[in-house]
Length: 169
Image (cartoon, rainbow, N blue to C red):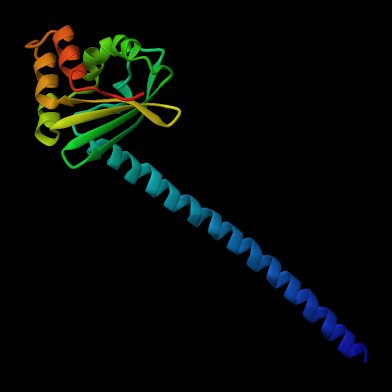
């Protein structure tokens, strides 16, 4: 009888020890395995995707000098770039005024005009307020390159772009 209790007790103790070791090993392995793929996916693939998404464009420099408009998202689809920005105003005149720095913004963001021109045909902007579209417009890459090369004034560039605007209210 004593031997059965001892065997049962030692078996239970052995099972507990093995479960504890197994749990520790699994926890360590799963933590390190989880870390490695995240580093690979986020570090390499995320950075490569951002760089190759829009050749010749530095997304960090794509900021308007505006307190009422801020860029939310930039996506490339084929030879087009879509930029979604949020705005705190729905007044078309105020938006036009806020977009006066658009030429400087585009000029600063396009760091390699030749690479950008080779891959992209147009840039479409959508301005949203509380999730609803307020205005959209597009920039033909030829206009941007002409502005960057000094062949078009900033006022002319901005007016050409604003002429494409589709306003909703």
